[in-house]
Structure formats: structure tokens, C-alpha cells
Image 1 (spheres, helix red, strand yellow):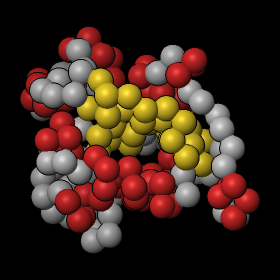
Image 2 (tube, rainbow, N blue to C red):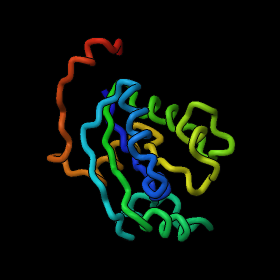
Image 3 (cartoon, rainbow, N blue to C red):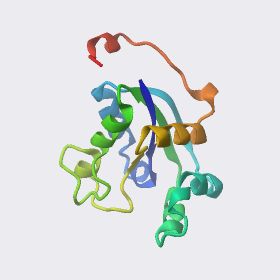
Length: 149
């Protein structure tokens, strides 16, 4: 089982799409093991997006992610990183496939609703950045016996 970080970004929160977005992950069979509403500080934003520092869009990215609270979720399941990325869709909503979150609800590349870790290594780093170990809750549900890993 993998655990990955999902952020419902300010545009997702402002547009009232959080419930519909979370529903997609749950209907896929993934399990939420941590969730919290976070007003992102500049320090956390800089740490999260450190690989983009120095790029032309970095300051705009920091302003965007700190503009309003975001929902931070730790989601667990078989190959959760890949499964979540497929549900989210291409970075640019104009190019994302219909049926994906960005394909159905997004039209921008910079305000693209959802962040999902892009690799198991990134997921491990990002989950630890956003959640203390004590905030992650492993729990059993009967549905898991109906999902073939």
C-alpha cells in the first residue's frame, strides 16, 4: 500500500469542489488516512515547492497556494500515487482528459485545483511535510475485501 499527498488548492476550495473531488478518490476505492484544512504559510509553501524556486512562476505559485486555506489529504491504496495522478489528469486543465478532475473542472495550467505527489519518493517527503506521524490513521473497512490489489 502507498500513501500519497493530495492538496485541494485554493481554487478548488473557492469553487466549492472539495466534496466532489474527495468523492472521486473514495469511489475509486482509496482510503483517506489523514485530512485537515490548512492555511498555508509562506514557509510551508516554500518547502513544499522548493524544486520550483528560481523559476519565473515561483512567486505567483506562493501567492496562490497561500491565498486561502487548502485541504491536505493523505490517501492510501494500492499504487496510490499513480492512481491519484490518473484521477487528477494532466496539469493543464485545457488538455486534461474528460473524466479526470482537471478535465471536468479545470481550464487553467496554473490554477489547476489539485496537487498530487508525482512519485513514491515525493509522496513520502510531502506527507511528512504536511502531517505528523500521529495524524495518519490506518483503519480497516469492509470495502477493502472487495478491491483486488
